[in-house]
Length: 213
Image 1 (cartoon, rainbow, N blue to C red):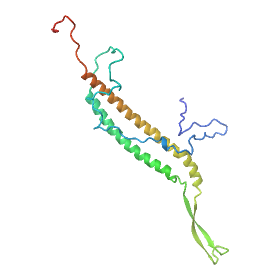
Image 2 (image 1 turned 180 degrees about the horizontal axis):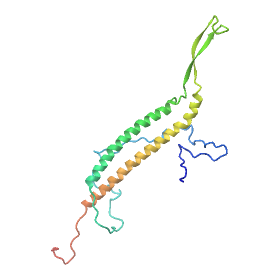
Image 3 (image 1 turned 120 degrees about the vertical axis):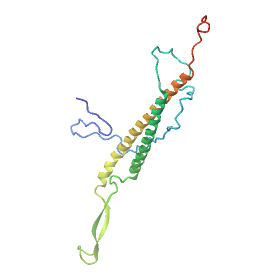
Image 4 (image 1 turned 135 degrees about the horizontal axis):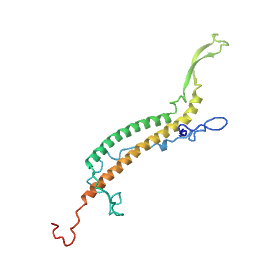
């Protein structure tokens, strides 16, 4: 049987005698500084062309450091690769927009401090006045706003849930960023293949072979 999975959001149950789950390590913390802000470095129209050489020092640029590997001929369809990257950029841009919208809502909810009922109030009727008994002369029943009984429970819940939501955003943002890095790597691969093709040439014929006929 597979082992139980332990994550920050579903911690492994405690094996103590009490059976209580361990406390959440980030309870009460503001993790907004760890929530990524994502922007698109490229879009489908601004992605570097395969027809431009890589800058010096980039992967694939400069003379080879190792002898070429022996192998069969490879075929790379740069047009298909470019089309695929443009589709990925379009979809990734949509993901970034949706992520930023979600992140703004979560951060507003956390900073607002009321989404879980932390500041909820109840309106109750109270007798106010000089009368000794309800209904006596010199007093009346008036509505009074008082803190709701759920406030303390809501505050305790928010102390754990707020940083958990921010950690979820961090994981989601990091995953989208990895997609962007993958797009960048594939773009470098395409530019490398194209640069290799542009700088390829047939070797001079061996000495003594004349014109090679």
